Image 1 (cartoon, one colour):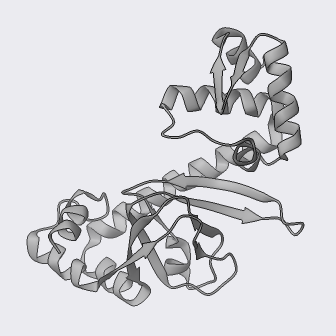
Image 2: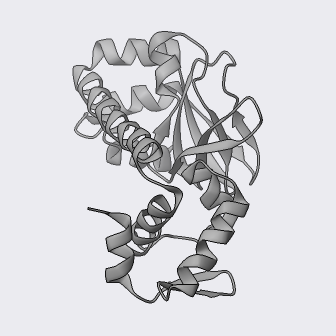
Image 3: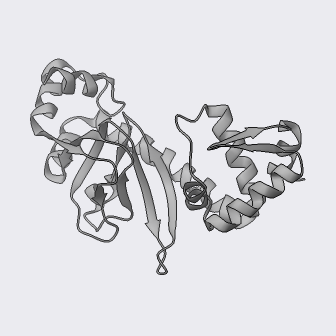
Length: 220
């Protein structure tokens, strides 16, 4: 219980609430252990649970009718997901899979509604969270619609190095993030290497000419 209370006290939704309020929220929360590769949610299925990541990583994604994956977000400890169906009561808009072993905290819709009504600061924090997610998805749509695969790949490589990505991504995972297929990513990476922009090492991509790569990422 102490670990859960500490998590809630740090989480943006609940930070600032007093100890009795945090204890009330903690009593409504269940925990779930997940293993790497475990399916947490499936797009289109009924779902009335908000999830909070205590430990581990979760990928949010959608599948095309042909089965091609479009990664929407990689989430880490402290992040939440599946809030939309908890708010509107409709099926899950996306799928979620555990990228690592981990622990999730679960809050059901009825308890969520009760707590939001009782503590207005939670409602304000949820609205702020929704605004951030909308900005993220708007940016994703913009990239898919307005930038070529090469430009999107250059932008991703720069973001990954600037953010100090916590782990390496496979070419298939990069393809899923950029809305394309692995073969296109493999060919584009070789083109980048031939042009002297990057160097491909064993399970590692090294940026050689950041200035030229940045020029490709943001064409004029």
